[in-house]
Figure 1 (cartoon, one colour):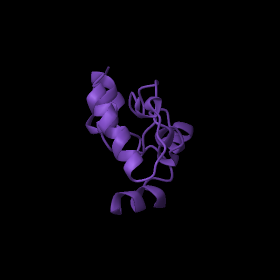
Figure 2 (figure 1 turned 45 degrees about the vertical axis):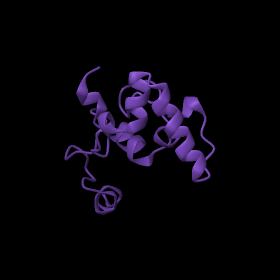
Figure 3 (figure 1 turned 90 degrees about the vertical axis):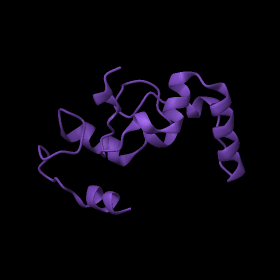
Figure 4 (figure 1 turned 120 degrees about the vertical axis):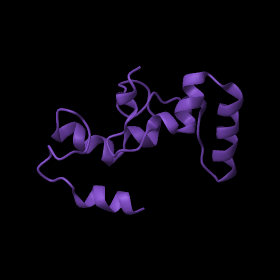
Length: 101
């Protein structure tokens, strides 16, 4: 997979995400630890929810990445699928607020 596909629309690098890496490596122990960690804080996460190929890879996504407004906005506005100066609204409030968090 091209590393460019692991750069999320917002600029984060999906290749550094524990869920992506656990799924990519088929690391069952890491997946189990992630499931336990989510459960410990009250999230009901299924094994398939952990499986993510990366925001722009065109494959599996976590439920929260699938519905991410930061991912979906540039998919609708630009050919390259990322927040960039090519967008007439760049940098938008959503992107600047996200970068401050």
